[in-house]
Image (cartoon, rainbow, N blue to C red; front, side, top):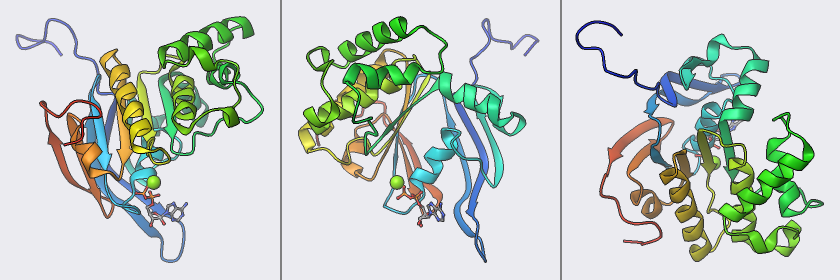
Length: 247
Ligand code: ADP
Ligand code: MG
């Protein structure tokens, strides 16, 4: 921007910008799951996406995370128009800029916590020693310094999810996407995981969490409701409750 109204420093592009996103799955007739989604997420936001089972949340997350392409509409990630990029470029962007956390953890059973976290750096081009050191630091940051050499079957559900979060953040992504991260956890461990995500957000990571738990979603500063593949509401609650404090 130029001219008298130009800001002193250029504004960063939104982390995500979706315009009229439609997603259909093949079939006759095709099944339309997302019906023209418009959504912008700015750097540093902490967003909950809430909706009932089957409303299209995971389909939306796959698009936000560049794991899938929309049937139509435009998505920009940190200002990059994904429709204009090759699969290879998109994969590189994903590997460096996005961390994923899923309900089912997806830890590799034969690996220790440290080794699992280090897999988050496989595409970084760094040496094995440096990957290991970064994994150890990431595990410390999620409070698991005493579980470095454990295998997943020696960990509680909450600990497994913290290992998965460490793996997601070890490469310092700008955006963390979590799909029902508390869905397999008891309520206390779930509160811990949400609190951890809040802390990562306070440290600068943009975080988007999908949940079907309306109470949890209501504690987020921004809450986007999905219903039948459409945005039903998009509310900012700057004074939302503290982490883990259920209303
Ligand atoms: P949510 O995560 O909110 O539960 P999903 O995004 O998983 O919802 O699914 C939304 C709808 O899309 C559901 O009706 C589901 O059955 C359908 N769906 C999801 N994935 C596929 C697919 N690969 N092929 C066909 N239909 C799908
Ligand atoms: Mg889902």
